[in-house]
Length: 172
Image: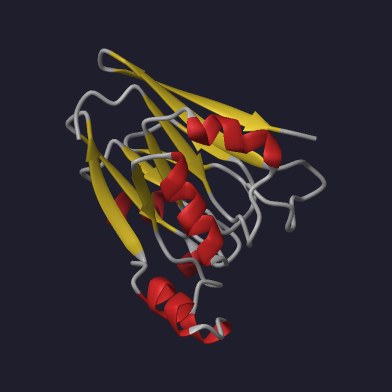
């Protein structure tokens, strides 16, 4: 995908996207959700907000947690990881639960060495590690579940020419 100037990154909605974040999602070129969506309504809402939406399954996105057969099918189709190309750069996304509650940025870098950016969720803690390539980020929890005494968070990437500027947001 070429010509992208803004990417919104969310994770850990757990069935709710905070109202502060919705307008940002409606005014972006791409939305990426790093798992623990926990609601097929969130999936349909994201697809209404933006034409290009990518999402992966988190450890709570399992079909057995849903009673409706259509919901089960939608959740069953989510991948555990995904690599997408934006403006000739690779972005890899996974929930990150394979590392437990302590993210392993070096482990993620070893898993996706050809990416410009690796996105994970799970910890509910916002992180932006640009000290080594590939960059590793966690947008924090976008909903209201386990926000570690902070508010709902997300990140945006503003792309101008070949410069990628990662902007963290957190609302209290």
